[in-house]
Length: 362
Image 1 (cartoon, rainbow, N blue to C red):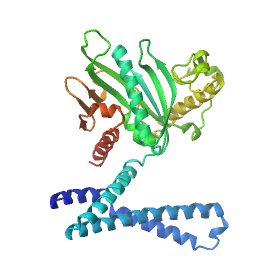
Image 2: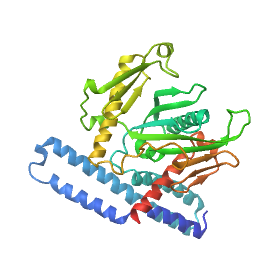
Image 3: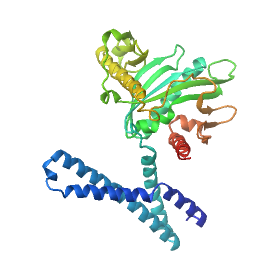
Image 4: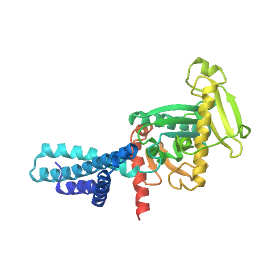
């Protein structure tokens, strides 16, 4: 069992995630909605009645979860006082799981956090080393997505002449994918002994990561004129079957007035890729329009910066020592290889979210 001091530290964490005033607000909201259901003619408007009933149900769920959580904390304290170690460990494990769920909801309340994510990785300064680093990041996000039970789909890939990745875009679909991954947007830096030169010298490479919410083209109307579009057609890179790699099925569409572009190559024919490329272009233009309307001041991150020294948000150092450090939150880990396998990324993301939350509440 924990010591008295360790228990107090754990209890402090458990209580920090719950605000009793929020619980009282939820109860008040539920009470007001329940009053509406008692009004004459409430059920005459079935759509409105259904919406309000769902709101009441959602509030009930939240209230019950919070009350059960607080009751479990009391049970934990009782088990500690009675020195019932088996019961204590059981309740502690349950509380830690619930705490993680509450933390997820607390830090993932942005307007678009529930959306799927479009993650683009582009090699920066560093030549073939940077292209290899970009490929490592793509593989890292694919592994991370798999560990989150998300689906990742490579929708565009441009490979380097000597290997690696010049530019790649992943569509990552899953619960709160954008809300979690948006903290990855920015310049990433790698320091290692280069496997691409005979001297095996220490080299520094950079890559840029852009993270955008997918599906905004369905929320804001974007009208495209054919004369404003420029199309490029080329052979696909990477996997996809023989026909994909031997025909000009990959497409890139450029919106000439803004210079914004979108690419797609994962479908088997040019027509399907054109449809998806247009969809992704509209998504980017919808984001641009919403930024103009100041709807995404803090919500959308990932504006392109120069992928070079001084702009990095995170460094991955493999030589002369092993360390991964986030320069925003200061969070560090020495498990460099595990991180490139998709491990511990959530720890870095939570550290950034907590850091930003402290700044906002300061």
